[in-house]
Amino acid sequence: MTVKIKFLPDDITIDAEPGEPILEVADRAGITIPTGCLMGSCHACEVEIDEGQTICACITAVPRDRKELTINLYVDPTW
Image 1 (cartoon, rainbow, N blue to C red):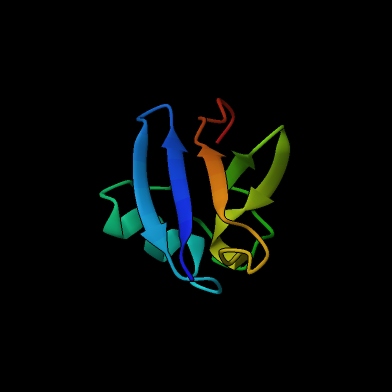
Image 2: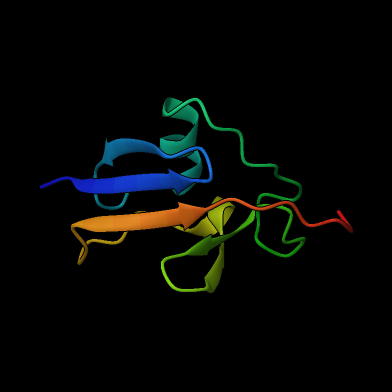
């Protein structure tokens, strides 16, 4: 089973395997998500999923219980 990942605002859709790191999925899609510590504490890789929940992409994997996931990339003006 694959999960359809849609990256906004670029409107790029790619299939991913459940458990696959989100940073790797983004890289395969040609999308760069900024990173810092790669441990989730600096929040440089923070993205918004679905209806406003924010996650750190460096420590988050594609969920196993979803068929589709929308990831909205945005720029933190203070980073």
